Every structure is written in structure tokens, then in C-alpha cells.
Length: 116
Image 1 (cartoon, rainbow, N blue to C red):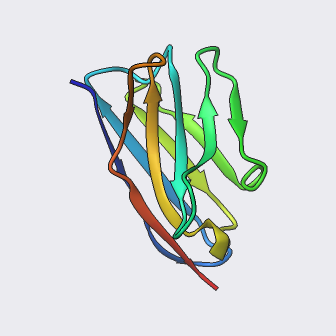
Image 2: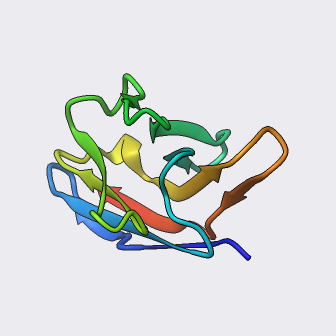
């Protein structure tokens, strides 16, 4: 059974940094699409960034240049380094693993709050 568990969220002032982690069990985070999404209050969940099976990394325009996605060498943990955080980055951040159109997994989410 595949499980994803995020951690690393918290409260930070604008301009600060946080590093989120997503630990996977039951499957390595390679060969599939893995990424981070977020849902701000009263908004729909949106893509933050993904790593494709070929290793290409794509980011949402709103975070490009400030956020960095990476994996550990064992490919069981996905990271999201968030720098120069803004109040608009306040959201619940989710890790996602997409194996196929019918098989995908979400973590439970971790709250990130950025104060002005």
C-alpha cells in the first residue's frame, strides 16, 4: 500500500524559508510523476511543481525562482524548498504521486502560513 506523509510546514514571516518533506512508503518516487500542490483558503487546489518520469521539473509561474523541488538519492523522499515566502503562499501543501490515470496518491497535507 502506497502512503505519502508530508512534514515541515509551519508559521514563517514573509521573506523567510521553509523546507517541506514527503516520505513515501510502498513505492519509490521514481518513474512516475511526483509533485507538490497547494490549496489556499477558499481556493481550488493548484499545482506548485512536478518532476516528470524523465526528470524534468516544472513549476507554477507564481513560485518559479523561489521554490525548488528535489528528491533524495534513495528516491523515497520528495522535498520542496521554499524561499522568499509571501503571504500569498499560505496554503495546505500536498504531495502527490501519479502512477497512471487511474492510480494516484495524495498525502494528508501540511499547513504553511506566511505572515506579512
